[in-house]
Image (cartoon, rainbow, N blue to C red):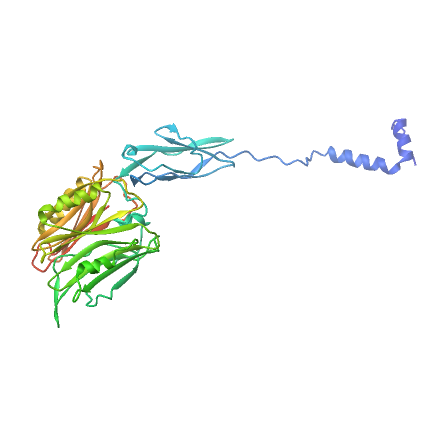
Length: 416
């Protein structure tokens, strides 16, 4: 009934009063002295490691570049981006978006350091190249394809002619290239039928834009009345071709609904005064987006547009009228001097007009490519290509489809 005599008197009294407590106490002491701890030991912290490095890129001025890094390691991860070796204030996320770029941003370098309590790692240093200016978002008066994300699908080609003013061929939602010009005429049962070819990028991220290709019979009306019917706040005509011999007009236009944005002005000019008229439009913050030649009146017909999104930017201009065999060389000249080709039109007899426009001071050469087909052989050349290809599409701003025997038989000039 009593514990061993070696136990102190106090323990003897305790065991007599509470015999069960001694067993509990010994069990507790045994458990505590067993060497097993109830506390978990935290694993060592893992230092950051970069999984995906940022990449060099070419972005047009007036747009923002976005650099991205992906890293692993014990949380929380801390980020710090650097430009030309200096820390960028507030750039403390896995992504960094620059302000709108200027020409001064060309060749700037960027890197990022990722850190946690266990250490830090610095990414590779990448370079930002600035390309020539892109249109402001929402400005559909030129280079409309730069308003959309890159499209990986095929271009769709449409060739045809309608004889009903009230009808049109709607290629669908998307953005398109200029009409192919060059007096292609087929002989129909009732007389000549003029033909045009147009290419369409049928999708992208601008699902509210429509590109329509129209060849209309002008019997009983005039092309000026027809163009006036397309004069509204949401439509921009970007390609135009009047054919008196067929009494038809080809029109390609883009619509932005329901934004009230654009205003159309139809102007007529003799060849001698054409350059001055284009210059006056540019100085008034207007873009000449389409041009054709009325051989009956002996004048060029211009469509210029103002845009409510920007009523102050002035444009320098250069206008060239030349023969079909010199058009591509003229287009290259304009691109080399930083002009975007905003309008192209005319015919083999009176010459083709190329309208070049650029924001004042924008002399950076524009990338371009040329695809020509001569006697069935296709040749492609490129100029002013950036070190890193841009993510924007090349858009055909000049397209010639000439009768057999002409040199070249067809040519397309793509500008970015």
